[in-house]
Length: 541
Image 1 (tube, rainbow, N blue to C red):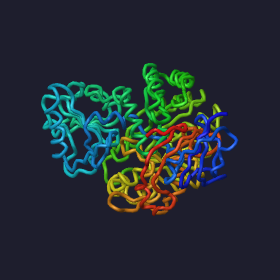
Image 2 (tube, helix red, strand yellow):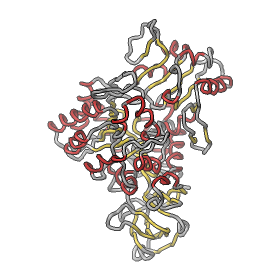
Image 3 (tube, helix red, strand yellow):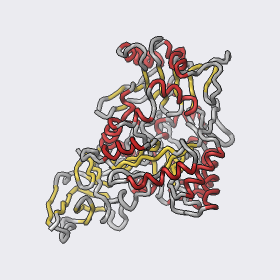
Image 4 (tube, rainbow, N blue to C red):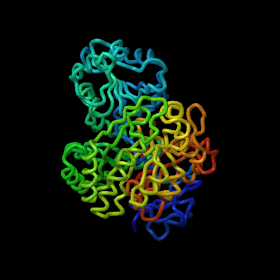
């Protein structure tokens, strides 16, 4: 007789409406075979009782459907952000309070770095620092013997010192959109979006290849496990052959604690070749490595001013809206991917970017009808109800940036979009009314920390760091938010047949919690502690 393990808990929240709660779950060969009471494993084989979680609460393994592997690898550089953050090994890094503190932190690193080698900071956000924006003159104070670069928290802006720009070939005569200049025409050191940032990122070793090597992927797994995530996406991965071989090896290690879903950068080659590459990757999927989806970009970041907004535009901030793909190329790539049956995840922060993406998918759908590819618009922070309805009609779903409400809500209220639009951005209640729960919310780690229960807390309470409530009409219930970080996120990744609920036939992936998130005060939701995870019936702690 096959062996069956029956896990007992104080309560099991299944996310399955047929059996919403249970006390036991039976697992055989990594698959759930029974959910209910103590007898749920009877008849499936020789039963072994596992009571280690008897005093705890079990949920489906949490799902982070939009984050980046750099959330692990970026910690090899120096954190320079506003908020206290914790690295993959559990060490706390206090936030920097002003530019002097930032310069001092980087000077300390420069003093311990061989001359000529780069000094890199990450996570900085000028919205939290008063005075003149960080520029090359500030970073020249760090060192005149090292290239110095600071990557902003939004991931769409980088500030560099004179040496870094000189080595990157960026100067007065550079003709690249996104290079900010002073009144004298000289670059000030602030670089917007990929075309402008790319040369400096290459100089200082801040590229995808560096951040997504084997050590970075293993660190990413640690980040996921620490917050209860058993399925984690990487929303922008080159996925060249050597990288996929490495991912097969690393995710195949018994110690790797999550199912990994890297989304292929489809902006490198011609649209047709990118579609062929995405389709070919499917054959290399494994139990813990899911391949074959594509990523495209439209605009940039709202808090950086590089997102594309419809009228009335930005509130009290300079507009630097940039298309990261030439518009006709974007439309052609959407069409090619759709025709090939490739599910596509499209970055679209501003409402004008959402409009472009909706139109491109509508055009592709007219030529090649396919209603269940589940193309996903990522972030869609300013999407309106009419846009949501058009998305739903086209088979599009969304993944809303719930964490922005807390981490950047005050900036949106006072600077980027103003009180009215800030009060309905990341409109989870509108999305729920249209998509019926078939959507996700996310952290975009390392932009904000990966912690799905915190993401759920943000969507439920819509409270900013300074205590504002950003539109109580867009608040959703705890039950709805938990759905968005489990079954909704599984739907977005087109994995809801495998994960997202504790249900017979699905993978035995669980998050172990110290409290019942459905009974705590909604303001205490983010304080529920993750005690461990189970992947395929095996504890990862």
